[in-house]
Image (cartoon, rainbow, N blue to C red; front, side):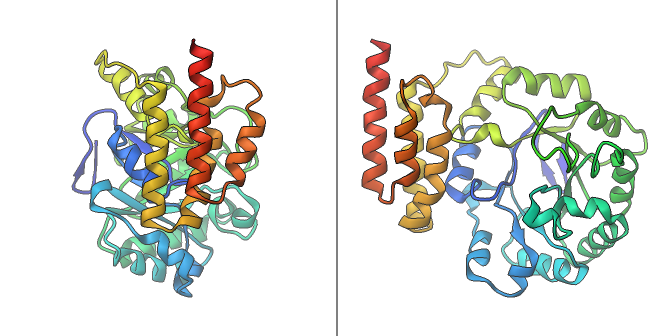
Length: 329
């Protein structure tokens, strides 16, 4: 599987771009454990054009995480073209256009999945961004605005004609948000369309190695993108990769997993700052599945989400280790 000049090999696994989730520390861990491609948090084109400091900071990438993409979203062609030019200066391996974010503050203003109600503008933005930059441009979108408007089959061809080099499809409509089940049959329909010649990346509800294997084998996608299942679980890429490759590798221990979460905290604090590094990391800690077996974990989760210092968070993690060991004994 190839995007531009980047060769990914068979059945690659991608980390989805997610706001307040895919910070640099998390991306680097996901890369270490087998993510073939990672993306920054999505970036507002309007904020980039206005040089908003917090938005510009999201463009920071490291050579250690390559290949890495930067995803942008916006509602005007002018802002998106200008933002793409700014992003190109950060030297990503590709630029992804977000036509899939369903949240009200994005889609409600016509950006993200909101573009599914204005296809001519979506295509104009895509065409002009492709022309404006020299790096590969890709798109991420959904099946349509709602179940009455499942337009992805035709839309995929139109986006391909605009010059994009890959398309990621989340198997839900905008109206579904993240509810219900992702419909992979339509993703497979796009992939199996003989007129489609760009890579098709499937996204939605991949939480286990078995689901990832099924996505590749049943629907024929070129890559699988994983989103919410990665929260507090960067090693999911190793679990899936080992299963797909039938390596028989030994799973990580709980201690090793907690070590990784602590490492993520350190990386984020060093590369961002203590306040924002903690803000990004504590969400992963609170969501991590490794703590689910701890009795009455609710109060501990609340403490994680309220922690404001590295010392506080590492102290909570130390307590979690001890409680898990007590359960295992």
